[in-house]
Amino acid sequence: MIKDMNLDLPTGKMTAIVGPSGAGKSTLFQLLQGFYKPTTGSIIFNGQSINQMNLAARRQLIAYVPQESFLFSGSLKENLMYARPAITHTEIIQAAKAANIHDFIESLPHGYDTEIGERGVKLSGGQKQRVAIARAFLKNSPILLLDEATSSLDHETEFLVKEALDRLMVGRTTLVIAHRLSTIRHAVHMVVMDKGEVIQQGNHEQLINEDGLYRDLYEKQFFLKEGHALKVHA
Image (cartoon, rainbow, N blue to C red; front, side):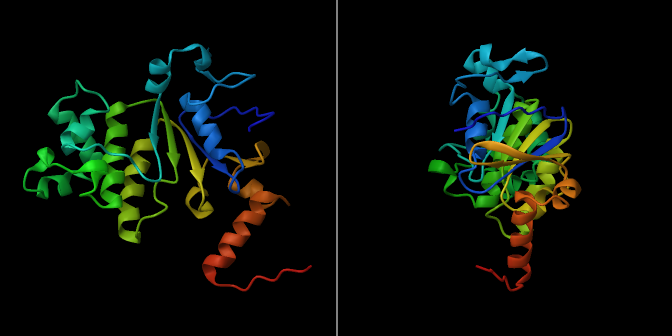
C-alpha cells in the first residue's frame, strides 16, 4: 500500500525509484498504468488528471519495459507492429536500429518475418529486451517506465540494451525502478521508498551525504560488489 505520496517529477528527465523489496515501487508502476485505482489523490500529467482518462488513452501515454519482456508467438514484425498497427516497414527498421536489434534481425533467414515462438522462446533475454525497446520507440509515448531492464543480462548484452535505453529516454519523462544503484547515479532525481512511503528525495550526491536508507543501500551494494568484508555490531 502506498500512502502520503506527493511527487513532482521533472518533465523529460529521468527519475529513479529506489527502495528495498516491498517498498511499493512496483505498486507505484501499477497505479500509473491503471491496474489499480487510487482511493484518494490524483495523478496529473501536463495539468490533466489521468485518473479521469479512459484506460486506452491513459496507457497510450505510457511505454513500459519490464525486467523480462513479454513477446507473442508470431513473427518479429508482428510483435513490433503490436505497438502501433499502422506503422510502415521503414519506421520498424528505424526503431529496430535505434534499439540495436536490426542487424541481428537481418541476419535471420527470414528477417523480420522470422517466427519467434511462444513468448519469444527462440530469442535470448537480451534480444527480447531489444525487441521490447524497439516496440517502445514505435509507441512513442511521452512517459517511459523501466523496471531495471538490464538486471539479468551479461556484460556485452547489457551494453547494447543500455545504449538503446539511453536513446529511448531522450526527451521522455522516465521512471526507473532501480535495484542496482550503480546504474542510476546519473538520474536527475531519486525517490527513496520504504513500506509504501517516500522517505527521501534528491540526487545521488545529496542522498549519499545524508544519514539515511539510500546511503545504507548503496554502501551495502558497493561492499558486496567489491568483496569487502561487512561487519555487523549487535
